[in-house]
Length: 137
Image (cartoon, rainbow, N blue to C red):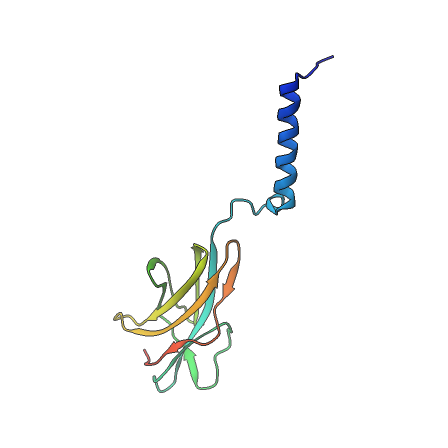
């Protein structure tokens, strides 16, 4: 029969406590180590080109069309970016948690709209709420 020394038993007890703490605090579900979040939204421009909206809905409001080709990025972190597709959708992943401003620019770099959203670790924020901006593509 193998006998554990008192220091070996102590290490086993510490290991059990650590595993129990990780499971209790959420790391047992596979999310341990997830430190980034993401943002998904839809960008629409009015038919007359006078305003731009960033919303969390894939259906364009009346009088608006998708802002296809616009550049979406995180202010201050421009490497977190996407190009708005033909449905008006953008998706940016791997963003550090915090409150961030999403900027929408046209192909010439003119700022069209912004929206500030919360980004949480291991979550996707659906962009929406009130965006500020005007001017079309």
